Amino acid sequence: MQDSPQESPKSDIADDDLPEMELTDADILDAMQHIPGYLDITTEDFREIYHLAHRHAIGRLLGNFRAASLMRTGIDPVPHDMPLDEAAKALVRSGYKALPVVDEKGHVIGMLTETDFLRRLKVDTFLELLLNMLDAGFEFKHRCHETLVSAAMTSPAVVLSPDARFRDVVSAFHKHEGRSIPIVDSDDRLLGLLLRKDFVAAYNLENIH
Image 1 (cartoon, rainbow, N blue to C red):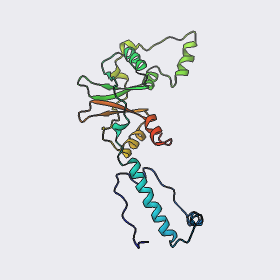
Image 2: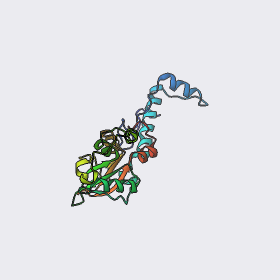
Image 3: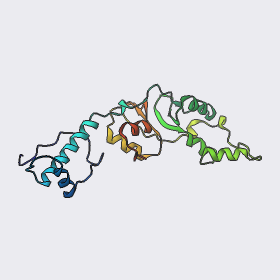
Image 4: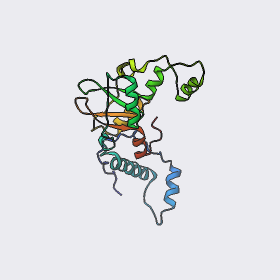
């Protein structure tokens, strides 16, 4: 074995993007006992090989990742000056829980989510809204057809470029509780939508909340 291990492959993946499990001497000695023959290697050498192999594997798995590879395209954004009742219909038709909001120039300026509607109706969940509606004295006090999307949307939107890397996506999803992130070009025009569930499913990242 060489006295100094070779430098690990270059990668834009940081150590804390997908943390490796730290090996104890007991772990290493137990593993070495299962390898036939005599091994002329110390536990420190074994641990160094493990670290280098882990970094190489992560670089191979995530080094070429770009947000564009997972984004959904063909998304119709919501105009900022659309009435909320029409925006609600657009949201239902889309099948998504949120849609990007654009200004008159097509720039993404916010997100319209189901939570935004609940907030306007002064409830926390749709079940709470349903229970309120079952009350004989309930009446809608919010007039959605008189309210524009710009007054209800969440703004500013957390956006990413199509070239955003793995760490950028993780960081963006940690910044807010939303289920999707608009992917935009250099002029903030919508290119697609990256769904949290698609990202989590692709890399088994159940801890991304």
